[in-house]
Structure formats: C-alpha cells, structure tokens
Image 1 (cartoon, rainbow, N blue to C red):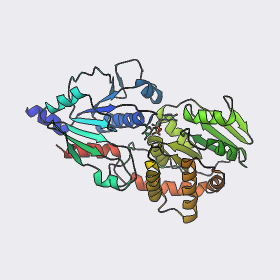
Image 2 (cartoon, protein in one colour):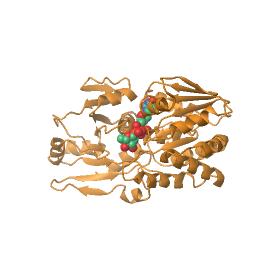
Image 3 (cartoon, protein in one colour):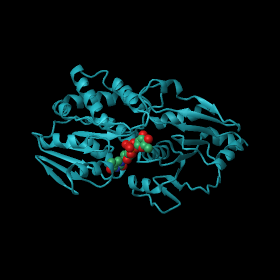
Length: 364
Ligand code: TRH
C-alpha cells in the first residue's frame, strides 16, 4: 500500500487514450503530448490509439501493423474493441472526450488510491474555457472524478503544447520568392487564392499536402500538378513527418493552417498565417474564430488588424479573398514582427504538458 501511495505521488505512469475521429489533429496533439511527457518529464507513457495509420503518417517510425511498439520512449498500443485492462495508470488522459473502454473505467474504480482522470478538451480562445478549466465532474455511478482540462491562450487555462527549447521565431529579411504552405479544408476558397497567386508580382512557390488541400487545388486547376500559374508554382508535396512539417512552417513566408495543432505550430513559427478553423454544423466555429481574432489582433496596428481579420473571415466563409490578399502580402514584414511578439507573449505561459503534470500532481 505504501508503495502504491509513493507511485501515485510520483505519477510515473500515464495512459493517454486517443480516438481518431477524422483528420490528424487528434493524433497530432496526443503524439506531441505523449513524447513530451516521456522526454521532458520522465513519465512512463502508454499511448492507446484506435487508428495507427494516422499516427504512422505523422510519425513514420511508427509501424501501423504492430499492436505494441516503443517509439521515442513512448509505448504505443493499438486500441481495439477487445481492450484488456492489464493495469491502471496513475494519470489517465482521455483525449477529446473519446470515451474510455468500460473495462478500464471499472478497473480505475476498483483501484486504490484512485487515478487522476483528465479529459483533455479541444482548444478554444473563448473566455468561458477559463472558468471551466480544471473543473471536476463525478462519475454518475462509480467513485471516480473526471477533470476537464482546457488548452488555451491565457494563464487561466492549460496553455498550449510547446516543447522545451523551441526556438523563438527567426526574424529575417523578406525573401523575394513568396513561399507558401497550404493546409486547409475543402470549404476554403482555394480557387480565389490560386487566382491571386497567379497574378502575383513576386515569384510564388505554394506547397500543397495531400488530402483536402490537394483535392481543392485539383478541382480548381485540373490534373495532378505541379502547376505553373503565371509566376506561381503550385507544388504537391508528400505528407511530412510532424517535425519536418514544423520546419516547413518556420521556413515559409505565409502559412495556411487549420484545425488545432497546425494552428498552434504556425504561432510558434511566427510567420504570417491564415487559419481555417474546423467547421462545426451549428456554425459555433465563427464564434471561436472571433474569440481568437480578438486576442491575437488586440495589440496589432489597427489597419493591419482590419486586414488580417477580413482575410481570416473571407477564408473561413468561402468568400473571394482577392481584395484582402494583396494587402496581407504587402504587410508580411509587420505581421511577422507582430507574430514574434505574440509568440513571446504565449511562451510566457506554462506549456500544456507542464501544466498537465502540475495539475495532476495537485490532485493527489
Ligand atoms: O487535421 P486537422 O484538421 O485536425 C482537426 C482538428 O484538430 C480539429 O480540431 C479536430 O476536431 C479534428 O481534427 C478531428 O488539423 P490539425 O489540428 O492541424 O492537425 C493536423 C496534424 O497533422 C498536425 O499535427 C500537423 C500534422 N501534419 C504533419 O505532420 N505533416 C503534414 O504534412 C501536415 C500537412 C500536417
């Protein structure tokens, strides 16, 4: 018993559960969290994933056909329907309300002392998340508490994923060639972007990853590319390993990003970025977009803020971006400077993984 209490205090063992709903954000976030817990906090981490193909895409060291494997000090386990709860961790992270296996919940309830059960929520800049961060909800029938952990943009939230030693954005002279990365959903007005790029005065290279971005470009231009449109080269690229994708974001002049994880990475990269938020049926994403713009643009020069806001809204509403794009490109040096300050401001907060470790420790 004494040994159990010690183990709990150390909270050495972490189980992270991830169900891939669609796209790559769920696994992107969970993989970053898992490897950072192992590398920077010395935790023994098992990452349970129901779709190893998605993980193998962002992390090619992972073999999609292995039920158990060790990559970067993380034990990766395929999460199947016939789940067997061989042991319960001291900290259990349920990513994005993915619903733990009932046998695992039963095993948690039968364990003494109880593990710290955390639901890791989706990122939002909305103020209500600050009030909900850290709240606990009792299980309806079992002696268990589930805590809600909200990533976010203020110290009242759990912060953002940021590895130790991540370099601040590099300030550099504007390269003549406009290098762009295009990661978006199929609802983005990609055709209007391509028209604007074709009309660019500067040479353009636009990198297009497979999936929805490439499909949108193919719809607009026909064929399989690469395409030459005026002075713009539209270049299909393979889906990159996570760290290579991060490096691409640091290199490009402008990044189109989407969802949650690439959106956060674009902010650490510090280059001008255009965010497409994950669309929701009830249009709740427009409120979330507005909440982010409110924070991000607060210290921005008014005219640039107006332009950034207009471009983000057009990109997210499927409207023609021609009017706002040229102005945005013209102001990339100022936007880069603003973004460096924004990244420094965000880096002043504890990173999500450290917050999570401290939060779990405070619940012992
Ligand atoms: O893929 P996404 O649209 O994921 C979304 C969001 O997370 C959304 O909130 C969630 O509800 C939905 O999934 C289910 O966008 P996101 O979040 O940027 O995730 C993409 C991941 O893929 C990110 O970790 C970066 C990674 N990636 C690479 O590793 N290589 C690449 O070449 C590209 C384009 C992305």
